Length: 354
Image 1 (spheres, rainbow, N blue to C red):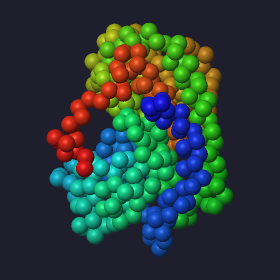
Image 2: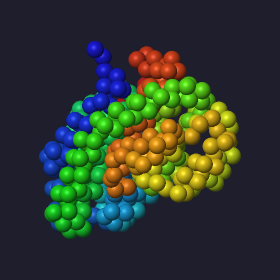
Image 3: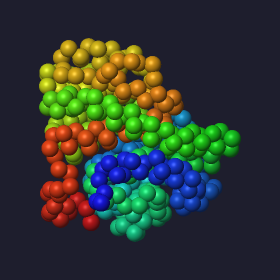
């Protein structure tokens, strides 16, 4: 039986648990590099889903541990930007390791004398071979182009990298670091329940998914990365207009496009009064509004309450899963056959991947 997006989503609980168990080995090149060094600012080179994963993880670096993070789109960085001299560490994030723009950005950084570590699912890829150190996502290569397991694995590995740096620098103690790792293990164990609740929710609202002409996801903080990845997945699979917005950014213009055929998702880790005020305002102006939350005290049929309490910086690992499932199931409802390859010559003609 051939693998599908659903295969990889169902595999996430085991895959993420394995990453937490084995990260001291897979991230060992970085651990060795950290010896005797102070890391104050990290630059991440990423595009597409890798960029969205970096957005999800940045809050853990900055808000939890005080490590500054700068996320750069590789092409723009290579041609139009300079390297901040305060940069202490550079991570090139490419699940396939074949992104031509990421490889070019790596070479620019290395030419300045700064080493680059490549976080990838393929340690034999061009980007990995060009890097000064390879950090294996530890999931193997995802054969379906619409990455799901690989996205969650990227977020988790970035969180573990933040935890490694903080532990090395004494920002977090040994006991506290162990508690954080246990929490990440617990999140992996909670994923089967998240999948079950999400799929039941998706089945209840089939008519709403089919009726919409546009899908919009809105989040805040670390959940901006979830909203952006929802946009990416819906665009890739459902192939109808989709967008992901930061909460306040949506209020500064994008709301004006709303019409009765649009469907809005509001993403929160716990009840957020600002988010819910916007949701309630927009409700009469669109086809439907849905809330995806980690809270478990809302009985509304349009609220998916996952009921897994977790700190905000770690919440993307759970809240991305409903959108991964939605993108797969809505595509099926819309009659999109994801097994049929399209634009097969795109990478060859545009030279976007090596």
